[in-house]
Image (tube, rainbow, N blue to C red; front, top):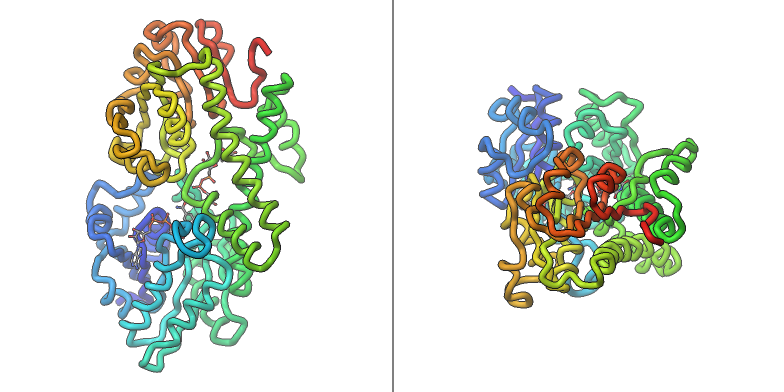
Length: 468
Ligand code: NAD
Ligand code: UDX
């Protein structure tokens, strides 16, 4: 008989991997992940998991059907659970008050209402979703409205995994953060969740705080990480104008232990479902509390990212004699980073959008992103669809290999840092391209000197641009 039962609401990029790792490390705990989306649950129960994440398949297969389950029977699983995680999406609001900035927590509220409705015993409810500070108050008040005299303890336990390294991040987290109420009941609940993580995380790495510090720390962590990327990207522009090399600068400043070497990789711009959403959320919170200077400070991180994305396409067009019309452009990479199939907020989509506006013919290759997913990204994120862009289907070709994408192309844009793009046979690619053959490296992964030797015109982010 399992001693503890966990139910997780939301079987997405966070809920699925996180619960799989809990199940793998705690064989005595029964873990069930539930979702409103039946297709998502069916995929988790199949050999074709709904997300690509290195190492995930093996972890899921090691415990699925033993102490890890995926189900659409949400009410039953909540009722039976001792601990319910809320790991649902909290996207930026698209309309109403705070549209374009505030995080929409309607899914979290809905989860709280369902928990209050179906529970027949006291439970710990854990916010795993990234939420605005003080959301736990709303969750707590909704839960308190149950008519059965039940008591719920609300904890905040934000997730710090990064996509592409989720399993490693979950197995060896830099820290686990748990916030709870400063009452005996709150402290008891914190200790119960601590004891789950203590099965594989050293005690010193489990940080406990009050609820609000925990909720806010998540937004602040992402804001600081994104700020580093925007900071180095701002310097990349200056490098291109002055002859300095951004990689040399990253090494030079990153060697100072006070700065550190990580997250100083200049790029075509950060993407992903978290950075922009969470900073906008932070900006909105600052504005709501009347802290306009703080709001503006963090907003600059987003503005710099917008600049970096559009700057890249502008430079591409400029270098191709100020016109991309009718030219075939090979886009290598569509995911927002390597080792994931996730395309949310990917810089690649923004570059493609701007190239489409120039009437370029785009041939995209990404080892993990399917055509339907690319089209959805254009539709939802960029509002480019067959209504606003009737020729979209014709202007975008999805290629089954990098070689196909580059065949006959005028230019290559490397937009995701997939390892396979480092070792392509660029001599073979060059021979089949239109001349002059351009390569624009938005990730600084190609061997520029070797490519120049072949005959390419190479332009890379933050590197001295030839003929300055
Ligand atoms: P996701 O969109 O991949 O998954 C969310 C899932 O929740 C979806 O499958 C959806 O159907 C389900 N859902 C929504 N409402 C539901 C309900 N009422 N009941 C049951 N299921 C419901 O989202 P994600 O990327 O896993 O992110 C989840 C949360 O974690 C967000 O708040 C996000 O900001 C945060 N987060 C994400 C990452 C990441 O790398 N993706 C990392 C850290 C934190
Ligand atoms: C991020 C946080 O890292 C993670 O802790 C949080 O839980 C969720 O948000 P994720 O978005 O999955 O994770 O990936 P991350 O590795 O942070 O990269 C985000 C974006 O920044 C990517 O587009 C990446 O290519 C870009 N990036 C990252 C850079 O351009 N340069 C860098 O040096 C690092």
